[in-house]
Length: 164
Image 1 (cartoon, rainbow, N blue to C red):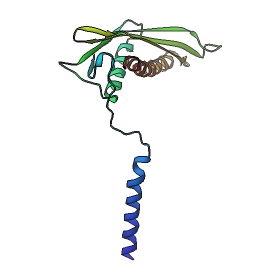
Image 2 (cartoon, one colour):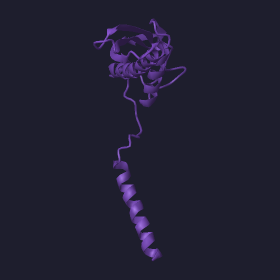
Image 3 (cartoon, rainbow, N blue to C red):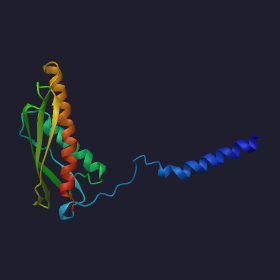
Image 4 (cartoon, rainbow, N blue to C red):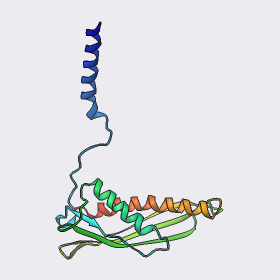
């Protein structure tokens, strides 16, 4: 009986070993595609926050660092290119009748600098609706959530625009 149990375990282990790579869990090694000018290592400076939202610059900076790391391009120190720029936000009026939402936009003007020369200067803008909330505190929480989500979208779009 023990022998049959061991054979089942071995068969199960073999099945897992064969099907494991097909599971599509999302894990994988990433070799980052080079950015314009053949740049393969990038550090992100703190982006200038030229918006009315005090956390917008930090949110975009953090999102860019995460995305560079995910793509295998994050670096710091000598020899790395530098990504710098500015962040602007704007709020529009009510997005839905009755003022249930507000339209937000986030714009990033970036510069990729390598060896002291500007390689590229993309501008990326994204918009989203943010719930107004039942009171000022809830409305601000929804706004902060929308800014964070937009920062992630802008970071991906910005690096896509910088790829060769």
